[in-house]
Length: 437
Image (cartoon, rainbow, N blue to C red; front, side, top):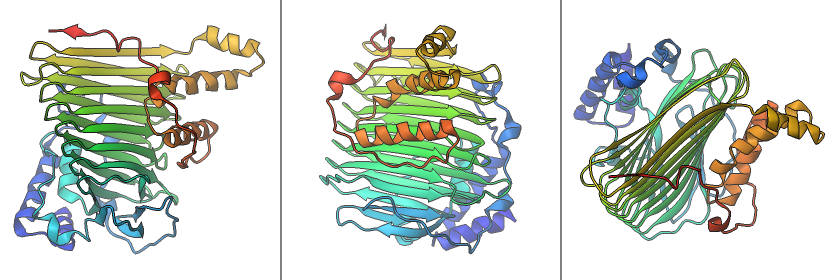
């Protein structure tokens, strides 16, 4: 049945025989690969919770109405386009619209042998989008790409930013209806920044808390390009994320920020990697996770600097706070440095609530619940101040507040006057330290 589904998907996208054969090979890889290929991390992973039912992928004729959140963007519902705004500055297409051009474009950065869900995405993606920002184009309005998930689907998303171009993208994932049983959403983000390009991208994952989310992100940064990447994890029963930034040419810079507020029995399994493949590159990753009730988080990260990465600067930090005894957090940062003349730092911490802080706030008239909320939301401030767009920062602050209060969280940009970040950005206490080789 699955092979027939692969054939049906491939035919719907107008693919050739070679593409179909690749899909079938990738599906065989999916069936044979372990959930976590690294023996260092495998003992912390529960494979049972990641089990999915591929029969839930069958198509449906159900439709939905949804208003676009901005002047530029598109909305996909169960793999179908239901809303779109046009702009002469960019080229935005669904994969169905790009049928003829998809076979000839070689912008897949994913290696299906890396992990089983990367293989699954390459085998069964049926929709997604291709966003192209032409050379020297500056797009001032944020581009909103919204995916609505209430049944299983697999998407492949491609973003290409041309030489000297600049863009802001907000990727949003919601569940507009009650989620059907065994629903999962698997998607890739494949991002290419040409020389001197600038991309600010924020992903907001606020799907229904009974769904399972699987995400693979790969970015390639060329000479002098700059990526400001951020992800907020609010929804989903399980979110498995694999993120890798490849700095392949001199002067490339990647800044990556992850924020997670987990409640009930939510589980986050996140891997973030920086690969400095060229000299004088700069990368930083910061992950902040707050765990409430019986939620669990496993955050893993690696800085890799091979022989070609001389005079590079890299920073990786993973911090978690457990708000009650039932929560569980594990952080595993790492360094792999094969050259001299580099700076590389990694930091990790797992803490519980500081009862002295709670007592102090309660002495000022706050209830214990409000005191815990203030400490928790304050825990995220260092990560939020890394985001350059003030409207995005304020929108995410409101979503974290909504999640804490048990309300449905939907991203709404909140305009606020921009300030100079060189004056207000806080640095991690370990960021100024480094290992030198």
